[in-house]
Length: 224
Ligand code: DC
Image (cartoon, rainbow, N blue to C red; front, side, top):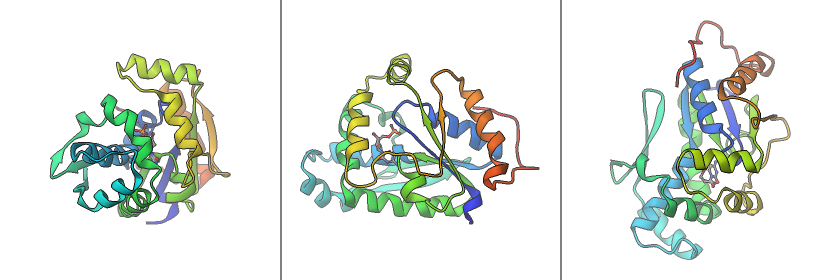
C-alpha cells in the first residue's frame, strides 16, 4: 500500500474527526480506523485488571497481558479484548478519565503504532487519531487536522450524553513527551466550529486530488 492510499485525520477530543473519518471512508469505500478506540481498549483492559493507570511502571508490566485484537469488519476496525467486542464500554467515564494517562506511556504507543501501521497498510484507509499525520503515517500525502473551539467541543460531548473532561484530556494529550497532539506541518487545518459534518467532508473530498489521492470510480454517496 502506498502513501496515496492513506488519509490521516488528527485533532483534539470532540472535534468531530471520528464522524468525519467514518463519512469520508464510506464515501471512498475505504476502511475507517479509529485509533483512539485502541488506546481506550487498552485502558479498559488495564482498569478491568485492576492496574493503577497513574503508575507507569505498573502499566508497562501489565501491557503484555492485555489481550487486544483488531479486526476489520465491513470496513470498520473492531476491537476485541479477550476475544470480546467492547465498543460500548470504550466511552465510559472511567475510561475517559484514564485514557490520557495510558496514552502517554511510550511502550503503549510503540505497540499501538505498529498495529496501526499494519492495519493501515493492509488496505486503503482513513485513519484518525492524534499523531497519525506526524508519527504513524508521516509519509501520507493527504493529512487533515480537524479543530473546533473548546466551547463547541464541550457542547458536542454533552449532546452525546457523555461525561468527558475534554479540556483536561487535551491538555494532557498536547503536552505529553511522546507523540503529542499536534498538526503535521503539511496538514490542512479545518476549523469545524461553524461547519456541519457534511461540509467538513465536502472540503476534504474537494482537496483530495491536489493531495495525490485519486478517487474517481470508487466514490459512493455519503452515508453514516
Ligand atoms: O479520539 P479519542 O478521544 O477517542 O481518543 C482517546 C484518547 O486516546 C485521547 O485522549 C488520546 C489518545 N490517543 C492518542 O494518544 N493517540 C491517538 N492516535 C489516538 C488517541
